[in-house]
Length: 299
Image 1 (cartoon, rainbow, N blue to C red):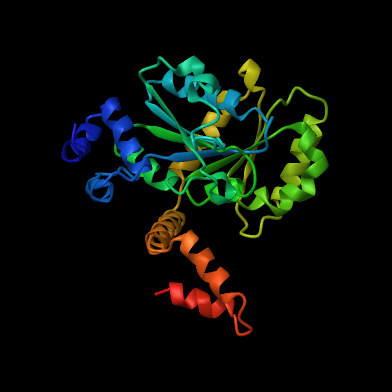
Image 2 (cartoon, one colour; image 1 turned 60 degrees about the horizontal axis):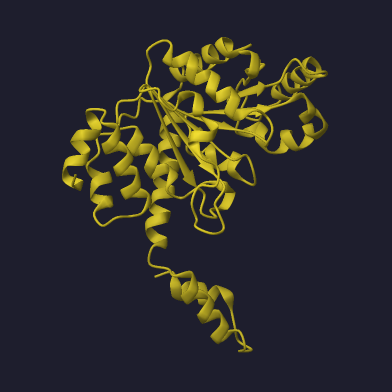
């Protein structure tokens, strides 16, 4: 299977071609950029980000959402962004472990991608991989993050819809939620809502949401993913948000994605090791100026 044939095979929904294309893009095989440029990408396929702190039940909730959507005949792709192994830079958490329930479902494609130390827990390749998946005849794409560092913020620049999954115990940190996740969430999900304090936490979230700076309304949905409670309501909210997405938001999102890709291309010529060597050479000088050094590399 060569690069020239992959684009056509992707459009036919060929899973083997999809897996191979993602590997080519992830490993930057020669010619992968030309392949990306030849893709026929369906930008109408919604990308749904699923994020939140560890222990919130993201994977369990996602499993239930996949079951819901595939039961209606939809094809679903999942990109699970995992912590990087310090030994082989591979994916530390396997998609087979987290999504075992759907592993043999031909309506579901699941792929893990390692963060490779990327700031915020998101691989710089995620955006490109998502565009590959968007060219392969899926009805919707989920991106699940590790929920650490700045990944919650970064995913807002990649997803058409961002779900932030919380649990009632998060109420103790509600001020942190207000300063961080509040601005990026399109839908808040209070999972494990059969626990004590869930109703109060959901009510407090709704009060905070009334003060969003842009005046938009963010829904709060209560779920108990393990018991499949609230999943249908959450799916309705996702579908409604997807259908009501305005043109201005879409253009802004595409602009953000274009900016990320341009920045990545600009950085290709800069080698961090060379940068460190140059600093080591010049730092002993009394006239050392970091901005002047940066300008030398920014050509």
